Amino acid sequence: MSAITETRILAGDSAAGRLLRRAGGRLLDALRGVLPPLAALVLVLGAWQILCSQPGAALPSPAKVVADTWGLIADPFFDNGGTDKGLFWHLSASLKRVATGFSLAAAAGILLGVLIGQSRLAFKGLDPLFQVLRTVPPLAWLPISLAAFRNADPSAIFVIFITAIWPIILNTAVGIRQIPEDYRNVARVIRLSPLEYFFRIMLPATVPYMFTGLRIGIGLSWLAIVAAEMLIGGVGIGFFIWDAWNSSLMSEIVLALVYVGIVGFVLDRLIAGVGRLVSGRRVARN
Image (cartoon, rainbow, N blue to C red):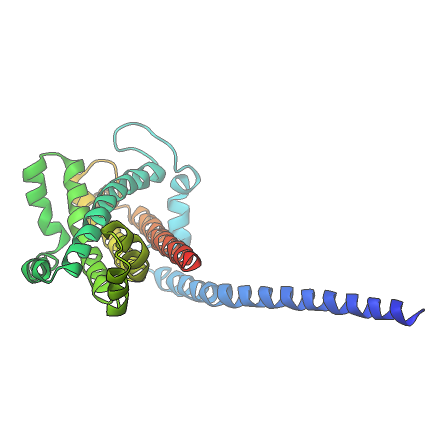
């Protein structure tokens, strides 16, 4: 075998080895990310199973929850009319209300956040009012919204809106106030129009703050709709939980809470992913 051929083989082996090491490193990183939460989940389920399998236990064990609710798990899409529907329809009804209320809160919150962040006069006038209103519990708004709208759906959407808007306003305003003065001076020197200033300076600088507010807002929206639906009735995951409580179906309540937690986690990750995407694009453009 010639020296040139041997060199090529060694080079190929070296390249293959590097690829294998990279693949092994990625697999190891993936396992490190998956194994700790998986182990924690197994421990929690094991402790839950042991504690709730004792005679006289008030709550059902995981095995009993699965056995009692297998029909709901296996067929979440059934629709027998009225409120007798699968969990998919209850969750989708709640998500529609959250999507509407949160979208309105995001639009209004960002605009108001920009206003009080840019204008000292607006900040002095509106910030005390916002600080007072944001401390009002979400369900305290429900009687007012029912009296104003006289309908369950718009009342629930208003509760979501009024709950989610405050962290969006305040975090956006903080982001606006954190823009370095040098950026503002450069914008004046090159005479950027208000629209150019917003897209080229203000938006990139405030995206991290803005999406922090949006993540908090989506979490509060999901909390608010579940609580509001317990009172307004109709189709929705909150009503499903309250109806199961009235019927003493504890296993159905536990199953619904699992779904509520999973959906809330997905919503948070969705907003966080959009935030990373927007931040990445802004950095790439700059």
